[in-house]
Length: 228
Image (cartoon, rainbow, N blue to C red; front, side):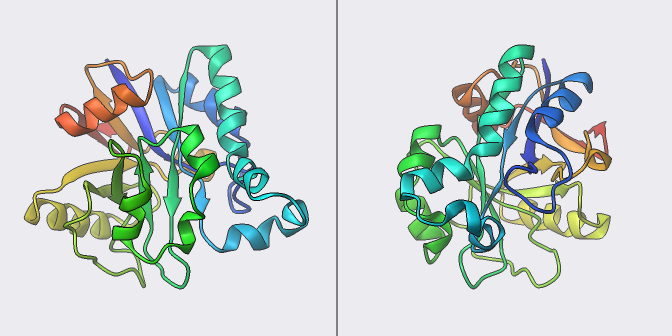
């Protein structure tokens, strides 16, 4: 039984994030969570943000650099007995929508195509591991568009960085299309700590556990820090 965070960004991989990965893990551990998924961005701005570091290195080393926040979080998590899983928030080049990836392991992210260069959800799903899940993040933010929900596992119906009425619209959308509902704090700074995530009876220790919980629907959403 415990709480698990599904949407976190680290300073190591996001210039707009205020907290380093190790500190984020400590914060969530102290807040009573069992673990989290690091969902740093896969979009075209990453190469601009870290251009000097990425210059002249191999594709695999670039892939490793994209996982720096995950690696740092995982190292801290191992010290605390706190689960840290790899994930991603993907935005295809030239588009605005964001999609959260759950269930893909570290080796996938080291060897996969550059995810943001794919054209659409169908291409993304074609390269993802069979058991992984795609959830549209905060679909009713400004400039974002409602996509055909057919390829999606679910919709992020509570996002800690999104206005309440937009979250409500996302929940109506997910309910109408009978999609799984998820919640995430969209952590970029300690102000967002513990706003979102899920609460479940099963203790989530690894990707297999997380996939079982999400697919079963046997969890409750955390919204604004409250278990609903």
